[in-house]
Image (cartoon, one colour):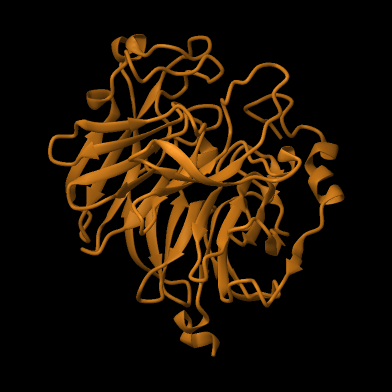
Length: 373
């Protein structure tokens, strides 16, 4: 098999190491402290499925897909599955790792796996969210001109081309309602790439979600930055980062106005002796500081250099997806692990690595699924 990145995944030993050193399936469960429900996750590989499990780790339902997920799914209020899907096309190898986060389609599936709604945008990647009006907001991508790319500061050696993000909103019929171009609204004198990242992409957004009718929250992994955008003008109202989060994923608002963020720790840049680690933080935007964090001890026990997410559960626990390792677990606010599941489905991803990674996981109360009663 040819791999776009030589040496990554070429060895059969590399492909089975994680399976040799880690248990899979359910590895911890404290029913007195864990939040009860069904957990949804999508292996980011040729398993081609969205899977629902119970608290004992048993698979209770599976949506078998005709493609890899790209990158996660959620259950809509009507009980259907909304999923970002990977479409294989001429853009698959747009950059050496583009197929890892490529999408191409936003889909709604009914319980039996039938597609009941779909929007195609072959430049779609990472994130797409269904909106109350029946349409969606999602991330798309465009290639910068040579002149635009030349203005972007920082990053590693020059590359053949550079990509930047476009955020789009469509209605239920797929008609474009709104779009925003990073190349038009970000500032090359401020939004500078760290030296340790490649120049395949400038922004690499991994999330875009409405804060209200007027503002959109966006997360840029490459820049280790969150942006709040004025929807009407497209202007940047505020920037957060880099620091205290780096290479972050899955920011979302909490009822108190703060953000819960998966701080991957990528590009933290603390020197050659630094130990890589991840954490989940509650970030106070008004005070621009971390007011709560979860990290493991020793810190390197919890680390995912890419993807991943976290969400607060109804009982106050937090469900975390340590994405690179396919590890999904619940913690109490005090940091006690009360439920843990390791994705047992290993298969090829977009560039031929064998892995069990997941982007995010979602927990739902059992009464959301009448068919399982």
